[in-house]
Length: 297
Image (cartoon, rainbow, N blue to C red; front, side, top):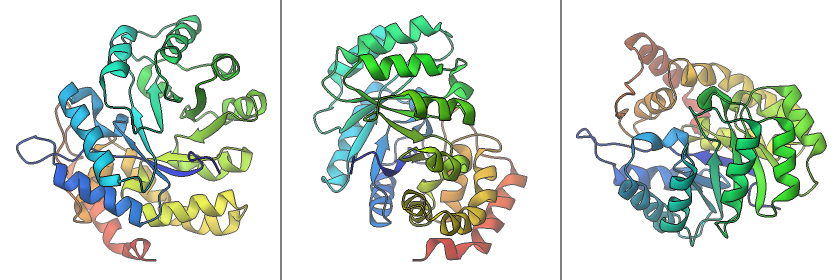
């Protein structure tokens, strides 16, 4: 079984009241996720507020994740950006010796053409010995990576091994699954679409919701991978309102509010992000209390 099968977690970055990275809370989160059955961790994904982290903080988070994980589960490191040269520098300077793969979001804001996306990823693939996972998230980047671009990269670059597909477009997802090579892995980037996407052939998910509900969400994904969709639906139905609230105003503000109400960390964010509104905070608090059974085996 490939290490990308199952539940990966795009980990949040906890902060102290003074705005520093809270490494104690990060270590607690890592232990909580692993002990509750997730298959791998993703450090420095978008949910980790990477745009507002310094390079030295990013390196420290990577090293902390390696140390606390201690080989118990694979670690994927997020390295992306809208300046290809800067991404290449990061690939050569960040501590990646223990990374199982690199998750690289497509360039944001610049809105490159499909040819630009191809050139960007092809260059990255020649400058790192680590496997690369493409990340298509047009809601954040402003540019969708087309099916043909994904398929071309999957066919032509040996160390581009997978894609986290978060377009939310089921037709696009099915076309990718139909056209990529058999050994190319497609995982979901949309928690609320995991059941239909795995039913169509995806091998798992890199999840936001699993930060707060690793046990329940891992069970959901495992049921799907085993073809037990009735059992998966029972869990998914319980989590649907949570998905909505997590992304209603901002990610990761939503998931951090869930984690705060569980007593796992503060909801501190770095500007320009701010905590969710008081009305949403109250709804999340009430929901967490009413659904405490989701935290139990």
